[in-house]
Length: 128
Image (cartoon, rainbow, N blue to C red; front, side, top):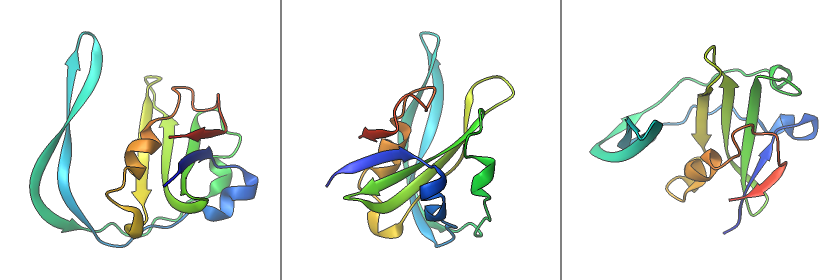
């Protein structure tokens, strides 16, 4: 399985999905500061089902924006997920949304989506 993360551009803007299907939550991230850096630990939780309503997203608000970006995750050239990030008021990145198609959940797509350079724009295609 080859996972590739690409920045959304005009040619891929139709790929942006409105995710709204239910999903099972089995863990949570616990953030902590260590040696002046933010770290996280994945903690198991009792499984439960969660669902968000589908959100309408205008791709034009992300394309060529200096403070917003969408990365699309592909598995063997099929869209598997997306992550929307923007620069927060404090100049840190804020993950606005992360979603993975149900068929690809549990296969490292979300984790690979986090594996992008801090400025997000230094590489268009980045194998995970």
